[in-house]
Image (cartoon, rainbow, N blue to C red; front, side, top):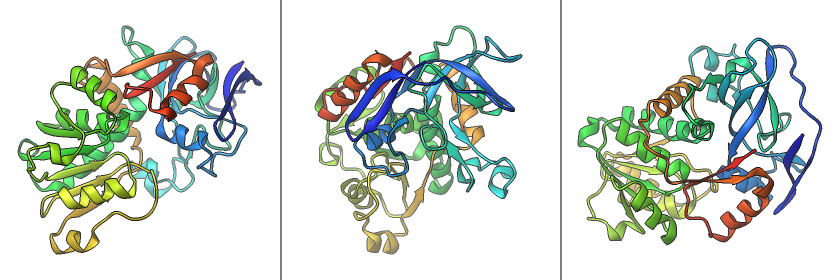
Length: 330
């Protein structure tokens, strides 16, 4: 089969690789598409030692079951494979399973390929009429859904009274903004520094206030700040602008250190919650919301052929992309 293989920092090769083999309760999936995630870019730059070359990246995928009794079933893929027996798995917090694996990280190859093997329990059926490229967005959208679900619990305010600011207008930030809206939050500002992306998002998602910086807003301190970037400067913004008693939800994994004003957070009882991926139920709920059209039209997503994936990574790195997400089509 053909696959887009990470071969070293800033190097991707579209080439022939062996077909995967389905064993046990796994099924082979003929992949239709796979989205480019920020974690893929992190690995592409050589910044993720957990993803050594050579490796097939990608984990936001959908396709059609190619083998077994479910052959022909259209599915979107939950890429997190957990043990199913630990205390976290038994309590519905599979994302915290200490034995969890994710495709695109050894020992599991990723989805920038024509085919993949996955456990049947990780597949969610996609209704006829829903494009598979939209179904593949269940993975990044579930990250925002999960963060919103947890942070609204901690906010101690009804959703209709909450004012929220999302830092970052990529797919994870947009997933958080859209999930906030679905959960009843109406006053949502998204801060995005890329001017071309900001302009496109204003056209695609006019229900949100897209600005370059907090200084461009009304200045009202938000109850909730979602950091979808996760670097020291965005953490500094979050801990500066959140109102006393508010909540910071941290999704982004840009870097590890700095930024938080811990003294202010302590003196003004500002909550902080880290949110990692999603539970299996979050993934299913997000997929269902996509199927029901609750996230809207996805006019902020671009599609490119998998064979041109290397160019897509180069364009993302150079800041030449105004889309919130690029989905690579097999």
